[in-house]
Length: 163
Image (cartoon, rainbow, N blue to C red):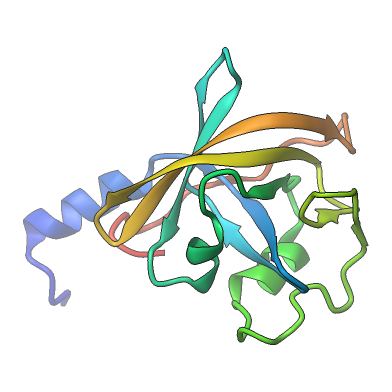
């Protein structure tokens, strides 16, 4: 028997069915670079092209994403479970996030995952508190599909109150 009240379990089940993609957000700071798995991403403007991404405000990378800072949103393709698993586990502050992962570096940009479906090069515009996550708004400066015939990785959770 579940410890949650029935009303909460019903809410969690419905909330978990909000579809989202799976992405790897990469960022650099000084000589350090890292990546994290994110799923709460949405385009939020056509002109200029902008997106929103929610990141747990306890993650170190959230402090790297100040206004004007670049990051790369790497879009994952359906079935890229090895990349999902690799970036879902998280990394210690001085641990390399890209060991065994093919990456491309462009000047002034965070790492691009060579095997991703595609990528969007972004620059942080603003940050807003949103509970246990912060919402980042970013301008999309450039992007490219690397696997134009692949389908994006769509994610559904069983419980909308946790990952």
